[in-house]
Amino acid sequence: MNAPRLLPVAPSRDVLRWAVAQARRRPGLLAATLAAMGSAAAASLAAPLATGEIVQALAAHRGGSAVVWPAVRLGVAVVVGAGAVRAAGRLLARLVLPAVADLREQVLEAAVALPVDVVEAGGAGDLIARVCDDVEQLTDAAQNALGNFAQAALTIAAAFVGLAALDWRFLLAACLAVPVQLWTLRWYLRACRPVYAAGRTADGRRTAALLGVFAAMPTIRALRLESRRLEVAQEASLDAAGYEFQATRLATRFYGRLNAAEFLGLGAILATAAVLIADGQTSLGDATSAALFFVGLFDPINVALGVFDDLQQASAGLGRLLGVVISTAADSPSASPSASPSPPRRAHDADRSLRVEDVCFSYDPGTLPDAVVGVSLEVGPGRTVAVVGVSGSGKTTLAGIIAGFYRPSSGRVHAPAGRVALVAQQPHVFAGTLADNLRLAAPDASDEALRAALDRTGASAWVDALPQGSATPVGAGGHPLTVGQAQHLALTRVLLLDPAYLVLDEATAEGGSDAARVLDRAATTVTRGRAALVIAHRLSQAAEADHIHVMRAGQVVESGTHRELVAEDGEYARLWHVWNAFP
Ligand SMILES: Nc1ncnc2c1ncn2[C@@H]1O[C@H](COP(=O)(O)OP(=O)(O)OP(=O)(O)O)[C@@H](O)[C@H]1O
Image (tube, rainbow, N blue to C red):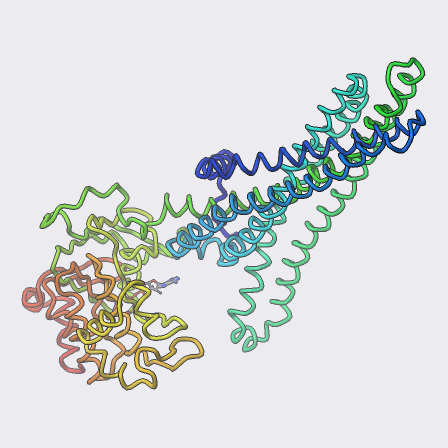
């Protein structure tokens, strides 16, 4: 079995660039957030200083009145600090959550635009893990870890300033802990990075394995493959759980080493205090404040280093999310079917034709032969070109390539006037009302516009007969639609979308005879005025087209008008005679 080709991950510099760009978009909010965090950090200095003064007053037996003012300052510092922390949390949420929401939308948009073969190559699990788990992780980190980290960093900086202000030797003593902390952090980051990266990938594989079991349930049951498939899913789950176990073990060792650093630093400060007090170079109050500054560092340091866990994972997730956006921008033919930048639009420009140039495609290069081999064709504005051929000749694959679902392995599709819309053989009906299904193409369309489109394609007759007309729920769990009705709906949606290019893949093939005539008329209405490529199953459709290409084994073997091809007496003529004998 081929290993899945997972979607790319954006490099760290792109992640950083994205984060900086987001911060720059809201400079006022960023400044207010930093100001609130700074106030909270400053307030955290006041409490140890006031406590030191109280200790000094009590030690010097200065009486109860000497402790009142420091006690008041202590109370004010606590209240102001708490208020500033709350304000900073709210401001930070307003700063980062919209950015995460924007990214989520971009990723969803990009995921929908990804070529089908790219999604299939990585397994749908990879994409789902990114769109669900990574977004959740990033939102969580944006709400908690980021704020906690920034606040802790400012509090640490403030405490070091406080220590230096009391006596530079206290600062020096506290700094003894720093090399151990930095070494611990360096060790931890090096050790946990590959574990987290592998863990996220294993999560993706686990999701893919579980999805595989659910998607193939009938086949699994029919072939009695339950135990084998469960084994595969179990292996993937154990693999993912193994990485979580490794991460927990690393975190435990990490906190153990931090405790050792704290012990070292506090011991050094107390020893320094003892020497300085004995020499009369510092007071008991200042020594108390210094010790409290250092003890006050325990929490923020643990928080700052500890949330690296979350920030690391969020940054890995961000890289994976940006990877989806980047890969779509770089690869997706559906975002722009042309490999080269589109020239500016020019009305009535002869160069607005849909051009397919020497396109090849294989569903599994190296294993399967090309399903489309060196196909070239052109569809001018307002023209209808038909593609015909026996089953398996490559028509549907060609339609998928032109619509941007598959990336050609060579050659290119050039669609200079905009996107290519596809009406597939079996269009999907989305869960929602029938009107919702139409509004997918035109979210702002009024009820009147929907009605006009339904009238034009002739679908209003059966839509009005539905229990609640266009407000009838359809799709999964809703009113069932026939394949013909789903195609009719898809054709109506094309009118609302109004694309320059249209590919109809046997859109009318499934209809019964009366329904087929209605759908044929709808198809004619919809293709009018566009460059339309019709994958024609019914040769009566092909006969009306401006030009016809005949495919065999992935190649175009004949081209011409209906009249020319019948006269040529080749493959098309043979198909046409068979069609007339057994329409
Ligand atoms: N998802 C797929 N994976 C692998 N091979 C595929 C896949 N889909 C189609 N093929 C193969 O590609 C070739 C072209 O198939 P395609 O469906 O494009 O032909 P078609 O002319 O549209 O056939 P039909 O008229 O029956 O829909 C066939 O050999 C088919 O078996």
